[in-house]
Length: 196
Image 1 (cartoon, helix red, strand yellow):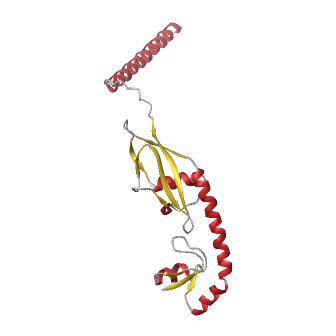
Image 2 (tube, helix red, strand yellow):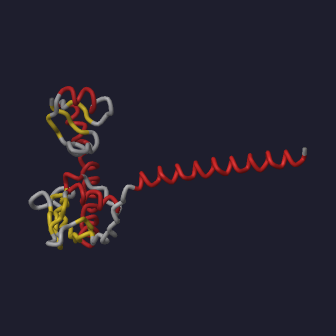
Image 3 (cartoon, rainbow, N blue to C red):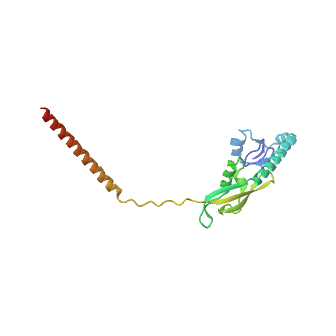
């Protein structure tokens, strides 16, 4: 089904674009939200009349993309990940990792627009990725992957049958309490005899 987009739709296209979509997607998602209209000669004429207005918005997007490109290329990203002594990462740096780092820096860029050569980085060092922006604008993102240095853990001495000792100590404490109770009772009975 051919539709004309009323507004920019993420993952689909921009305002004024003519797109082929599934009927269900158009009827259940695009039309109810007024994101698109059916592609008819009347709708095309309406969009043709708004062409200058749409072109102005696209020009503004191009300028925004250029400023985002400059900010991305000036950005220094440092990613710290666990790695072995040879510099090989235990995990991998993926476009998802970069997406999260960019979000922390205040960038709202779709994950699928971030492209890493080979899909992932598995070693420490300086690397680059490309970020596809509006139209043909592409930014080169530089990032540094560093190894996470773990503090050596203190070795714990193995426990030796502490459970048996605890039970033994508890038994001793119970017998001491019992003997204390017996001696207290015998002292009281002796005092009672003397009073009589």
